[in-house]
Length: 178
Image (cartoon, rainbow, N blue to C red; front, side, top):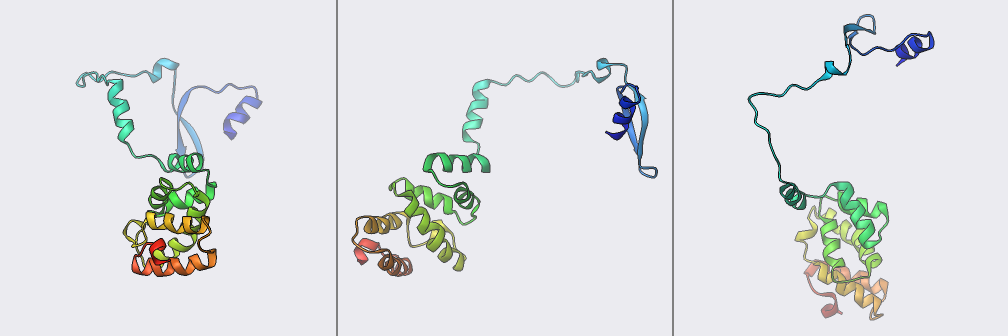
């Protein structure tokens, strides 16, 4: 960049060329000049046949490809209206918190409550036991059951914490325990 700026500022012209790096002197030097765009031409490989790909096949492949991290985060934000940092935690969690959350969200629209329980209480228990959200006794249905007990004012948030601890430990449905 510095070489080209100096060249232009002194009235010179930048020419198309291939340059090599001299590590001892820490500068570039010309390896060869390029006449024009033709010097960058593409040569067909005679031993390889042309490959024609059906656009429908491409679409079928795209449909079964796993979503990228950024696509998953954007979908969480858009579909569930969660904050970006919450979506990042759910997507990046190696213990399947995101899958657990989505399974619970399929049957309950109390997203903020579900998220709060998952990110605060459930994640702590899963990590302390070095477990995975998909292998815990407290299923997404149980979480929804607990959230609905609170939402319908059958129990308080404080009592819900005790109910959660017992039900998590014994794999019992919160409404049956209550």
